[in-house]
Image 1: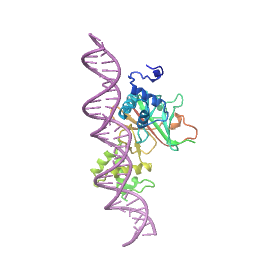
Image 2: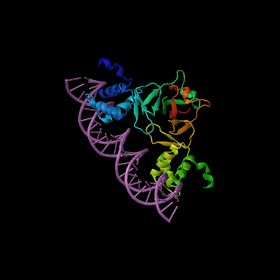
Image 3: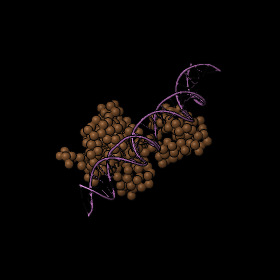
Image 4: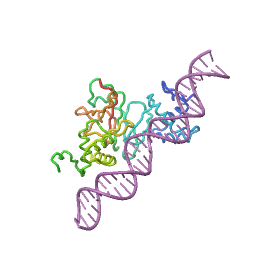
Length: 132
Length: 132
DNA sequence: AATAAACTTAGAATTATTCTAAAAAAGGCT
DNA sequence: AGCCTTTTTTAGAATAATTCTAAGTTTATT
């Protein structure tokens, strides 16, 4: 294992060469790339891989909670290096997507009227708007 | 205008026969149907319409804030008769989608850390989980 | 009624994603 | 190391929701 591969580990997931490459590429690209954009990045690297593999790797990483998917409307799925709980802001001026964090100590159930005891396994919050 | 068409009006939108039909069908179907499901419903009615028209009508209705779109992952877009601000709960036991209301007096910015003065034009909240 | 604008339509086109089946790689075992 | 099993990668085909196109129809306007 290479020295700087230590941060590229994901518990419970075998880190193949391709998965590491995809993971690293996403970690180096904060602007929520699509699978195709990551595929383009891979093509420019030393060992290009197929688009199917990019999809497979991303799926495995999402499945193991190492990264997140971002779906805005019907646009191609984007991928997010931030595995922590957060939402997304789609800036309609620039078309870019930013992470939005929760205010400290707050949670979804503070504002949403869910039945007592509901088990939340996942959520997605996307806000469209314009920054001041 | 037929007597019971009064509630099928949408400000600023010309209500053609097809748009009314689609709107009515959605109002009578609370479980967030897809465009294809609505198309199936239309086929069984007196005056069937094309799938393209179902899409066109839904788009016009969404555009005029009469209905809402619901996107869960990459699944086919579903449509929601509830035009008010709300979120969606995707029950992983049943596969069904329910509306979730905000707790009275609360709003997104209570929990999300958005820059002061951000203008929110739209949002989508989807929660996956299991009911107790 | 004539003209222009908006809407509907069938079918083709698009495209992100998934599937398939075969080859390659990785891990375990002796 | 060599053999066997499982997992992963791959190229290309297949899928399917949605959008587009261009022609026909309806509605509004003059």
